[in-house]
Length: 488
Image: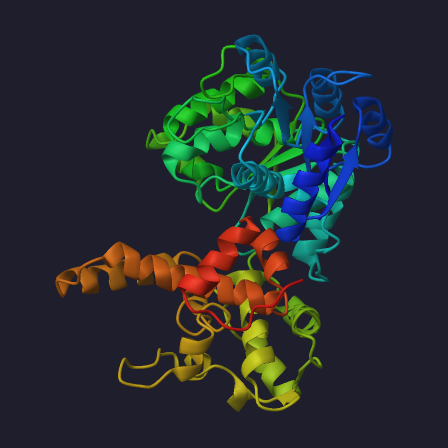
């Protein structure tokens, strides 16, 4: 994580904020004037910028404008001893995250900076700069056709619609199209439209102005702004609400959009790649998807084959995922026996490549020996049924998310939601109180435990991966009594 920059000509202000943020294990870099901060910004960028508004050698508003032009994703907090309306309006018009009047309460200032930090870490560009690399693997003829199509589209900015069953790797193909396009030096931003609640999706896509709705404490850029100059990948586009389809069509048609609550049109220079596992033609006939939007998206169509259509790739993919899983956990990679590999090759894998990856994660954790035999595979694969409710499952109670494969992944994407609905129905039928709290705690426990396992217990790293703040994950770990966390 990059340092928080503090810019103020008052040495005492810089000292107080440095000490307060150091107590929160947050790195800082201080400047006595805007000129020096601007010079430093030529080579590096802050995670958050906290700047005085009136200083010798350039104002905080000028610094705000310059930083926002160069690094629009960086939250900027403006401080001033002159708490007048004009300064506040100018700061927010310039895109400031918040306005802090002097003298301020140090604890409240730190809390504000942490909010800005969480917003900064939430920005998808942090994920895009990750060193983790993913690749598309496949030797089957059906995959070679996909690779050839990616090559033919390498110098194009044309809109692409990727179709295929869930778990076939549509996002990987979208990333490959971006990587080999003229926009490769610019951001790749991904959004699963089915994973965002309907009332939040508009804000996710187009951003919102401060005060646009309850909880909108600061102006926030949407995915179109984050992807400026690059590629926006809209997964599960078939699930997009009908009214938002109209707004998306307008952006694709004239290249302009408005933030939620905004009155100033913004221009979008973005290549859109969409994906769906649904039959969009059928949804058009049913009146669930706009026909004009369908034709806007369906310029070039790429269909990804299911895993059962490319069984010859299962050994290659299994080896890759076992190596990847072992690297993440810091253990020696498991090896599949010939008979076990032949057995896997004969399976249909309704969850496709994602299901195979989940299986390899399960094998890495659960298989007893280094060489995996058929008998070491999950019982559900061997017997075609799930464990009875009376059978103990202590391991899954310890690692609910990592080892959830036997319960859900075997049956394909979406089944975990069905299981959640079943559990909610059971609790409600039993007259259980606080059902939302019970299920929320179970969900948060599973996700945080899995993130900590993925980061080898590093709490701050887990918080970044989850898109939450350091204080938030610390509080959750304490509330949920989760063990195994350590400082980064």
